[in-house]
Length: 262
Ligand code: GTP
Ligand code: MG
View (cartoon, rainbow, N blue to C red):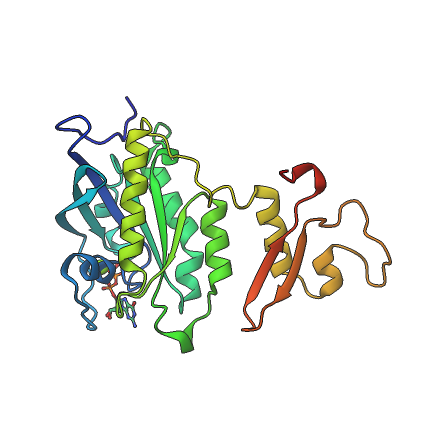
């Protein structure tokens, strides 16, 4: 049996799962959980001290799911406390603040902390991760756009949701999809099912999108020298890039012929 398989009381019916929240301090982890469980929002910042624990019950298809939620403190000071809680987890809510680039850049470090704590035998592949791009109500301060967040999440096979704990936008949808994915994982013998979203970018495509985002001009974007009249073999053959009418970046992937599905 997989190490992080949940405990089952009655096969096929009730299920007990463990979910944790991760992300920098003040990104809104506790508020997201509060919004879902208590349908309310507190604007005053009350830092989580160590870990907050709560239990909730949800229904997924014919199963009653008992969810143990461990809401972690994001402050580095609580590293030692957090380390006790990573194991035996089926789901992770990974949160960043769309107005704080640092909190987005820190997501890799959060995964590294978890991986390190789980040790060489820990398996991150069998855990459902949902990325919450939180505080989308603060439109004026937004500095991490949807395409960037979604790309990061989906290139890792994680779910991605835009959320606001303040308005409630995206919160129920996020939890619903998250719990369904965890139940799918349990019913799939503890292995993360291959989702459409995780298949949306190959590693090569994700690297190309990243390169395009960081390009200094259009030539660089296409991977050719200024003035070139044809594409060398190494140029990105499958990526077109344009701005839509709302001036938000959109990527259109055009797969090379051998990758196209007929
Ligand atoms: P730690 O417990 O220290 O790790 O922080 P946390 O990630 O749990 O943050 P918390 O939920 O306590 O929220 C931090 C601050 O952000 C609070 O002042 C919240 O009111 C505010 N906040 C949380 N979510 C949102 C949101 O979606 N929109 C806005 N505008 N503010 C939010
Ligand atoms: Mg908190």
